[in-house]
Figure (tube, rainbow, N blue to C red):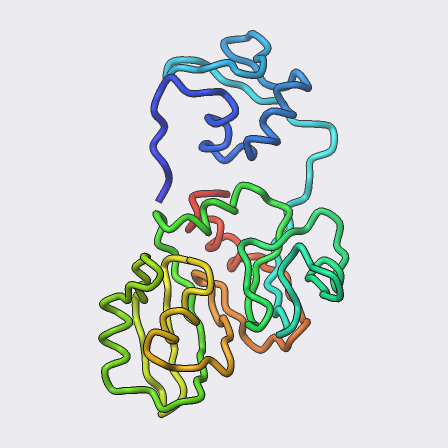
Length: 236
């Protein structure tokens, strides 16, 4: 699902929606004199119409785009560590790579790491309704009504939180699929049912799966998996 382009539109946003670059990268291309509108060098703030001819020249060094599936261990923060904390960046130290979204410190599992800023909003925005699947173990016995209640939605702190699907696996274990990513969403939903989360692991983002990765391990998203992943985001 891609966003409709409504003209006239700023050139940097146009290039972002056309998957040429992020807005920031588009501004850099424009400032470098590599973007042309009807044969004229574009300037920051230019707007384009549907009939304009847009050309973008490549920089001398084209950035290689990297996509990684990473198993974030429990106890590690996604980013912005406080005193005494460690982040993904501290562990991996791969220049230019950043996590898409976040998992809270006490949660574990799949995080996508990349240097491609185009995919951030396309994965995280709830309007695209991309699925994220979690395995949850709770301390108390799961009530029979949990599945229907969580799928119908729970209002907590003035906000409605809804699971797309819930699959009860046993007295203390369930799989939950979300298409939104509100802060501590699963923990808040289960707390409303008086359930205490003992373990929360993300197993899947869209069609990218954690697979047999162990905490702290990573693998490249490449070949057909990469093609399908980018294709589902409307990218190449």
